[in-house]
Image (cartoon, rainbow, N blue to C red; front, side, top):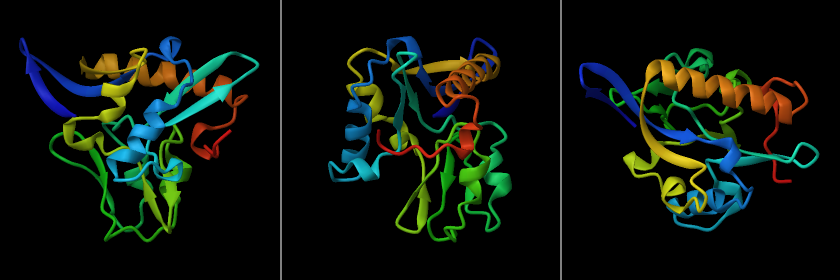
Length: 175
């Protein structure tokens, strides 16, 4: 994640999701949990949501929104967007109240051991991108308009997968 200047236009490097390329293999989930030193499916920060009837597999992770609703909802100020553009959770400030889970329009924040966690962009070197065998996840420099278009596409697909329920209220449990 990071703000870049390309030819006079401000762009942001982000993890780009191309839903049509996702096969639902869940390698991204496992490699994500490995980043934190264990192959533990409970410790992932990216989740593949499936709708078997529709044949849709959709990787869900934090999109590091320019104006994150999760940060506005946090009563302790534990969630902030840093200068590089990454929305971070400070575990020392997090009370575990889970208000942010309710506000995230993508359902990208999860509860783990009385704390919340989400994609932290792996310090700019996301393993989920490196290990995705189909290219459904890629690192891309995008304008804010392109990012917003991608976010809207993901949110629309997520609503379709979850039968219209608000994404932030969807429990992203293993299926």
